[in-house]
Amino acid sequence: MEARVEGKPAGWRGERGDASLADVHRSIAVRSSGPGWRRAAAFVGPGYLVAVGYMDPGNWATSLAGGSKFGYTLLVVALVSNIMAIVLQSLCARLAIASGRDLAQACRDAFPKPVAYMLWFLAEIAIIATDIAEVIGTAIGLNLIFGIPLELGVVITALDVFLILYLQRLGFRWVEALIITLLGVIAVCFAIQIALADPDWGQVIRGFAPTTEIVTNPEMLYLALGILGATVMPHNLYLHSGIVQTRAYGETLPEKRQALTYATIDSTVALMFALLINASILILAAATFHRTGQTGIAELGEAHKLLGPLLGLAIAPTLFGIALLCCGINSTVTATLAGQIVMEGFLKIKLSPWLRRLITRGIAIIPAAAVTIWYGDAGTARLLILTQVVLSLQLSFAVFPLVMFTADKTKMGELVAPRWLVAFAVVIAVVIAALNVKLLVDFAGGTG
Image 1 (cartoon, rainbow, N blue to C red):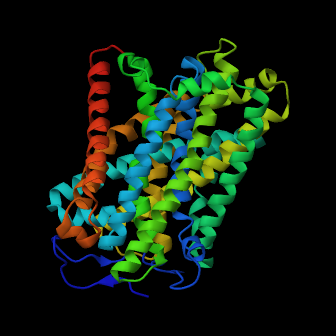
Image 2: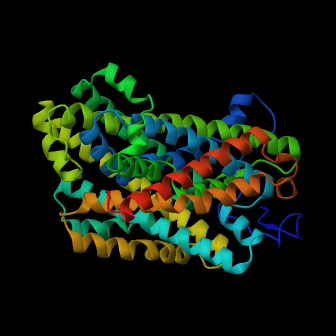
């Protein structure tokens, strides 16, 4: 199995060194002949790990708050976020396949050390913010279904390290199978809840149309940015550029082009599926809470309690709790993998897989656990929404390098991004940065 790249390729300051996630690098065979669908099937999986970012428990808090307060208005934000995600994730696959580097390795090999260390620090903050949301979400899910105290639930979430180790020993496909199965459970839970809620589909369709109020209303903008931060997540960019390389797609240009096509299809289909889930959280909140005048719902526990009486069926809260627990498990698995990619890529730390995962998990889970235990039941929604805004503020520091690398022919060779795609990606990067500046100005001025 090829795990190193020797020499100093054009456009990079140094050689890549060890491959991303070296223990599973190029471990999934790709057919070189046979029907196209069989070759495409080998690439199905990474996109769904990325799509988990849509269903992060922090996104539940922002979507519940947005749906209960503003009805269906913020659905357009979910749609725009989805389009941004599709473009950016396609660039991640392009970077990985063209250069053999994940985004963390690319930053390390392209920038001077002080800049690379700053980007690593910001990426770690993003992963900590992600993990706070996931740990809280999983702990709340365990509490809602089994009555397990939050403090104990936080400790239980740390066990995912051993789950990943066990599944990866069986093969990376097992990790992907777990994620896709849990996504299926989440989809079924929401399909039933939406059917019970019977939303106004005319209003749902109108919710996907843009409105200037989202930008002019600071409170709406705050929630919109939270949804954006929960959707296009910084750690997803690092994650996707690492896990795409678990496929043994070959080294020739035609093989790489084919791998890029199939990897892009995988992530696009997965993100479209995730949009349905993402939007359904907001639709459920709008159809149940906003419609009945309960516009201040953001606490996951509060939403769980109210769903039964509002939908008139005892199973509704249980479905909500099951979906939340599945989301939490999925998100902690993907965040742990992203943490490993970030630490190894930026710092070149070489440790045995179990120790690497324990360290990267510890960096994220210790502050998450401390915050959860400190806040308890009260204030978790405020904290969840804040973590998503922190993620949104971190986005530019992952997006701008990604766009720079994929537009540079000396780094990408023949697989350099076409000009139209670069232009679109630059617009996305500038819009994200501009929204973040506006958010900071509004809240610094006390308008929030």
